[in-house]
Length: 78
Figure: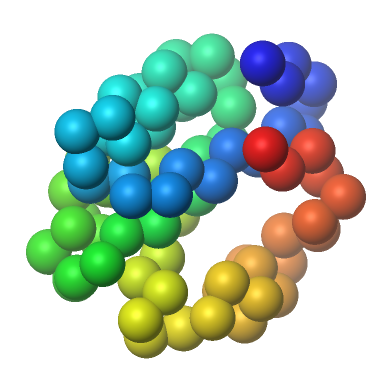
């Protein structure tokens, strides 16, 4: 588990059976959470679970998304 101040967790399939638990667990641990989901309805669901940001990779690449939110890939992404 990442514990430093700038830790970021990217949860693949955040709206799924285990993915939604990973979002909540990471958030409860004080980690910044980026959720990836397919479908705009799942974006809102991921954010309602506590994800700081949510991405639908069908509409934007991960690289574009991280760059647009100024997320450094050296920030301890897990």
